[in-house]
Length: 463
Image (cartoon, rainbow, N blue to C red; front, side, top):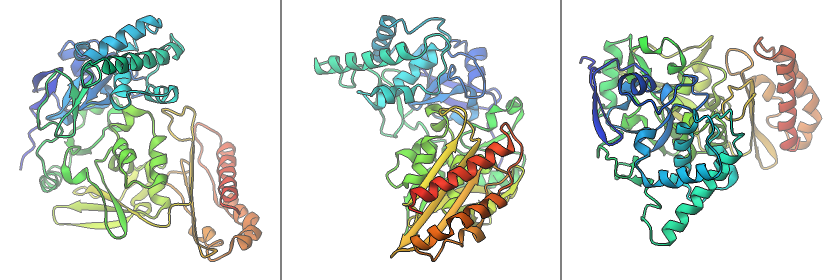
């Protein structure tokens, strides 16, 4: 089987596009440089500013973090296309009424972030609006006028609907049978979101083309300035990699499930849902995936910390078979993993029980987009008054996510009162075992944060 990515077909603002250029090119650069859609602004090219945000199948995504080859049979809407919709009129008028547009550079992305909010929540609170635009930076307004404008637009659209306006609440988005969303009146491929590749085909490609880099969300891969030189195996739309379901013992998350998929799914345990909600901003969560977060081999990976502390498993497959190993064993340090050159991450298996009593904290410079300076997760499972399991994990401390089973065993099998008596010895053991690496913050700071979080976890658990 050969790789043919010379042609990528997708809908763009209602028009069917057949792109024959470099499939590894950033969508941002193709929109601006090749298609002349300069309303999408180029800011940071790292997913930090949101100026380049577009809608892909109705989801807000930063176009600087999207390789064009991943768009096969999707629907893309830029600000040029969105201005043709009826909901844009309400936002346009609301922004003008609040002087929410000054230099205007951030506004295309901010408007599409506003659309994303209103498409899913017609009556958002101020906090929900601020969360929805949290990945979009603006140096001029101070954000308050933008927040007010989105609230005004929501009330205008609600009033129109109550007065007998369009059934879709003002002409924003429509839900398709395929589960994708596209802008009303702009057209969409009825098979949007499916590229036709099956897992077995991807495994054959993986075996025969080891130079291809597995690509799901791409939010890490596309940050590199060398991203356009990479050759990718696009996996995002393989059905077998997008499932979330449960069996007798595990909740199983497909490797291509985005963080937003995980947050929204009713089977997702609260500990994982909480961690995913703190990953970057909506546009990143709509693109970044579980498999990609693990595959990068980083000790700062937010979801990986949760999978390690819960003793989750990872299923790896190649064309000849598969193997399942603990997520914690997958990491070798220094960004290296146990993934073989012919393997793909297929899914993560998370235990269904014993994880309800948890503690999770992420420490970073900016809530919306920060990479963790230190992260912590702890689980204390108590059965009939006895500690059945104690598990603690630290991220962004050394080059792997760390756990010390021998230290946690100090509390397992003890009552709460017995654990209280051992508390200071337990903390002292961790204080000795944790030796942070140098980074953007000092070793002393990172060590103090780790011990403080550990102490807080114990106190919250009644120890």
